Image (cartoon, rainbow, N blue to C red; front, side, top):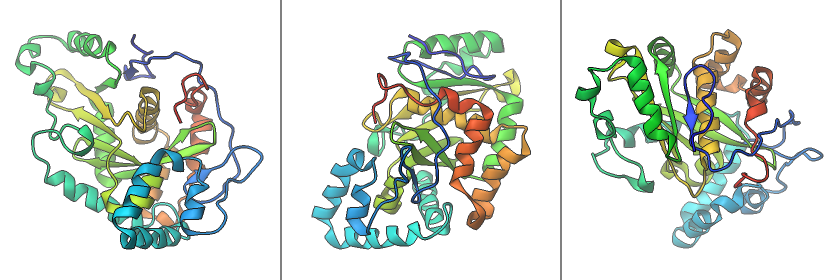
Amino acid sequence: MAGPLCQGWGLGAALRSRAALRPLGLLAPPARGLLGPAGGTGTAAGSGEAALEENPFYGKYRHKIQELRRSSPDVFESRMEKRSEVKRQPVGHSKQGEFIRCMEEKAEGLGSKTGKGGFTKNKTLDSILNVEMVKEKSAEEITQIWNQYFSAKDTVYAVIPADKFDVMWKRAHNCPSFLYALPRKEGYEFFVGQWSGTELHFTSLINVQTQGETAPSQLVLYHYPDLQKEKGIVLMTAEMDSKFLVVHDAQCLANQVQLFYATDRSETYGLVETFNHRSSEFKYMAVIAELEQSGLGKELRPGQASDKS
């Protein structure tokens, strides 16, 4: 069953559950990359793996981390040391920049089939839609076709007005990465989002900290400007790693892209600019504060019936 259309774009998601989404209050800032539950700071004690295990989201990545420790203990220890260095640096520091650059390099070498993690490489609009056939239809008809096609699927999709996408696209060139927050029962889980062409790749911050440049994408948003000039719309859909994210997680992140990259509010986009160009000044609590101020945060925290974390 199709989920509700989101503000302005026709951003939709097919959700298995329509459990109410509740707001999560602003919490005091603990250790880098994680906000703990109310009543505690969530700060990890000690260092190395012991500190890593205190992260509430460690369990989700335990298998991959332990596999790395068994197969390449030297690499594992090296990354734990680097993670300790990263925790002493502001979010958005060049260590994350190295990961971003590696992701871009890997994206440039993509083939045409399915890549690691099951994501489609060079996924074209023609692979989804008969572009030549729909060119005879109006923007409204194409929007209806797109929404009807994806309404029965467990994914995120949207039809973005051309002028809004222009704003996003220009900003993506200037600021290709940003830090997003997913509300969880334990607090917030942070995800790094990186533009690579018209694809927007997401992976969790803890994934970056533990796997470095090999951290795989966990969500990819595909934007198709094929019909932008002629029809005034840009089509979007997504693929995600269902072992780590569910549809409402993907929708939450997609909504935040709209919030931060398509906003008319200079203070909001200013956070994106700070993350990319003045990383030492970036404060991750400002991201959560912006979600609260925008009202978007009230729709994001999953209820316990649908929370997979």
